[in-house]
Image (cartoon, rainbow, N blue to C red; front, side, top):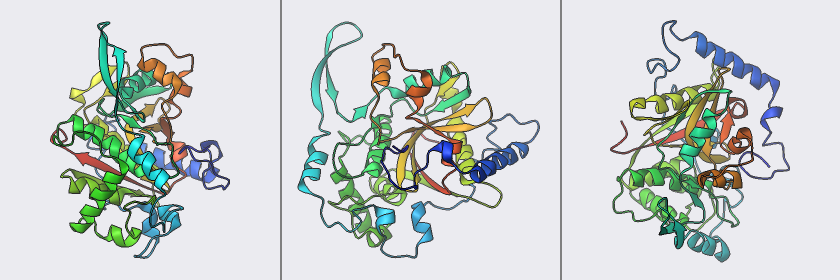
Length: 366
């Protein structure tokens, strides 16, 4: 089982502990070079050092595309259903029905009966729990987390990998909480998101995506940063896209982590403190690497100088231990175990040579 929740018989996904010694050495050298480049009188999180924009300065494209000539993409980029005309009816039914909201009865904080709306593959309230767990880890110096309204959306039990759509839905939980989409009464399903992306192409927004994918409506083709940008632009939400690639002097992961830290330390004056954790009002980030996407909800700076992303991965359900903490109960699991599904260390990320992020911009985002 890899970090993206898929089982593979190939060597494409390698556990972090098996990452090549050469890449680990490059990571240490790149990290040290960054540390030495800081002004001696500057604090570690000085925004003048963390530029807050991509060091490459280019608009994002799905990272696998950059190595291919223009034209139709294949299974490497779009997945095993790259040439599918129509998904099976059973998969379509799952996408339409399995994430429908339903009403349940529960007990409120005042002890009275309350009626709540439940969506099976959504989990709210995780950000404060993560903040508390990270603050209890002695190896963590400081943790930055995004707006607490962000929900974890996990995959539905159907044949197909729709991670790009789940991550769009996670970003929408934040955007809707800011009030930026007052007419969106509920989070759109996968099929509705596909329709909106196709509409964006019709409107000339990132229109080359249709040629590259052959169209995505009603299929299980993978989508990436390009399609996410088209979706948000079409619904009136601007987004900043950035790409990070290995350079001769620096690994992509080091540039990525510095950029993400700069994102979260902006407007810390508005943040909530939970131990060594800071819950800010910043948006989450759509995060793409080869073959998988997740949603970045935070960043840890470790005592040893290393950094880890905190992500909501749609491939993972919320664990029983985390659900216990959400209910205000204790969990017998160790902190490291509880955080394992959310942490992506710089060592594990060093396996990849390219990354892309997409940052939604709303009225609350400066």
